[in-house]
Length: 230
Image (cartoon, rainbow, N blue to C red; front, side, top):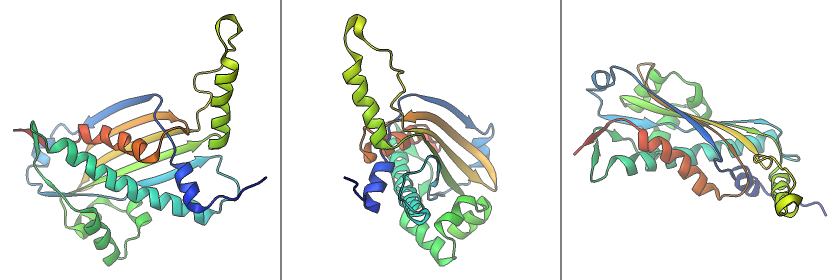
């Protein structure tokens, strides 16, 4: 029997992913300390969400837009929490303040800057609108290969057909992957990239979204600059 899934269900399903493997690289401007010496406040922008590959059936482009924008704000909030968590510890303190994300969104609305506008807008202009010294731009690209139900089916097959000893069937270790995920975090000021970090991984359906998103943003928060030892 065919069931129609609600938009909220799709938001939950599309968000189901976990890093199985990832690569990492980190870049920081050689003159970071000099370039940020006068910085007092930064803002975290709504995350740019890009869904590619095979999209779920019976879902409209408007619904996909809604999912992207919902996840955009969730990632924005999670990144703020992660940066603050790793910056304000017994060992470190943060040398700048982070603008509250509600203030960021309200200022964007007052200046008629939509969430999607902020994804591509000039960083220098955004800094002026938000009255901050730098902005943090997060970009998540999810390339979808199969439905989450299909991914679940592959994982079940692994358990049933895996067997023991000589009867074991060779099933690729990434057979159940649902998405390839590329995530980039950039710190921008005066249209110059002062710092960035990058991850790429594969994912499946099997972990709750809040844990997954927290794991991703924690990786950036742990390495985020503007930290000094106490």
